[in-house]
Length: 126
Length: 286
Image 1 (cartoon, rainbow over the protein chains, first blue to last red):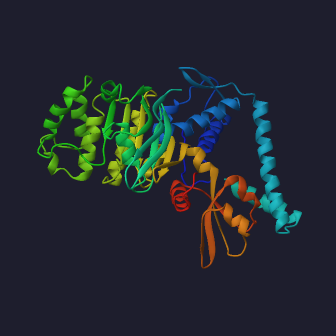
Image 2: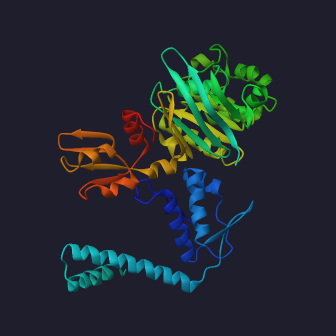
């Protein structure tokens, strides 16, 4: 698994770690029972503070993605595929909602917005 | 969680300067950056921790033991790098080892040799022939060669170039991979070393302005910028280190307060440099 941290990104570092581990779980790269790198090793590798790393792992545990076994490390938890999909759908809805809000602000018609979406989707097909 | 280092209400009075009621704690397994402008009292505090300077009041505990009552025992397990090298100029690095060895039951000759080699330091060279950066590296090698559990580094980055600072960062984050260790390092400027710090203790004029995790400090404040005439007098007062210039203003604000400001104001995530400058200007607690 790769984790790439940007120091100029708007998202805080713990959030970036969290999202990338989640993405690896969603994509199936990390599977049920896989062991995450130890907190201190990851902090050393990424040259970030131990506390920041702990926070990312704690959040992942609270959201049910991993379980921390005392003295052993963090293991990936089995995920319910339907739940994962639902969560992703909610995310898509949220972004679309943002796009609609932005469009209304600059008085873009619904037709134009849909056209823009179609255009972008075409551009993304590679 | 145990504190590897703890200061409680420590005082020191000089005629022109004093350290007042200094309290902070470093939990075991973490790195603390001790930061403040020149003359804030960092070296004075570190000297008191090491009992190189007698404190006038308060308590200091290292490894949960009184730093004076258990001085011998504690010092065996501390590695120290001071701002000024306290070795004899005429010594070679071999002489240096000979003079340090008797003080440490857990001295590791092999480790010392390996570290000097890593740092490209010639053991036959005399201390006086070393550059400032090389002296710091020599002290670091000595500090890491007796299985210390706590490292205390006073301005370790001063005089080091970017490559050496990167090596230092690598060493410290490797050191702290062992959760039983701890690191306190002081600095008057923010450096790349800040990235690996878990805790920040920020002092000015002998007083602690903030002591806690770095992430909490950075998340608590936002940088705000905007044009002239958009803020009320009351809003201006909420801004820390408020600065007005010809075409606008800037400053720092607590995250909880910025929503009440006009929408035209730009916000950015804060950084340690901004926090230190704004608070030093204002002279209040973070």
